[in-house]
Amino acid sequence: MGGFFHTPKPKKFKIEPRYWDPEKEESEARKRRRNAEMGIKDEGGYKPYIGKGEFRKGLTKGKWSTKSQRRKSNTRVLVLIALIALLVYFMLK
Image (tube, rainbow, N blue to C red):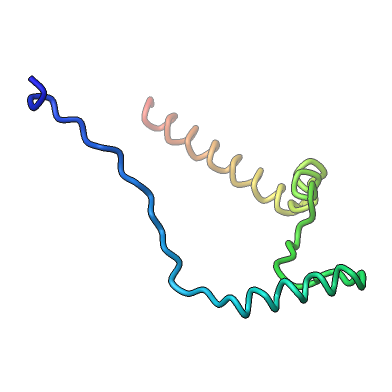
């Protein structure tokens, strides 16, 4: 009965680093320690255009949608409703 129902073994995750430079890692660690002792902040890396919490504020205040965009959108909706109403009117007539 053991071979009738085959349950596969879980796959193991195994990753090996392709390249590791201990000298580079050690020099970067020294640089971080030196900058920390001197009080220098690392300004490199990714800086988002939108700060923390700014996206939600922008959505609630309408920061990214202008009045003209909203007006165009409303006009499109009204035109579509009018076209659909005319189409229904002619179909029922």
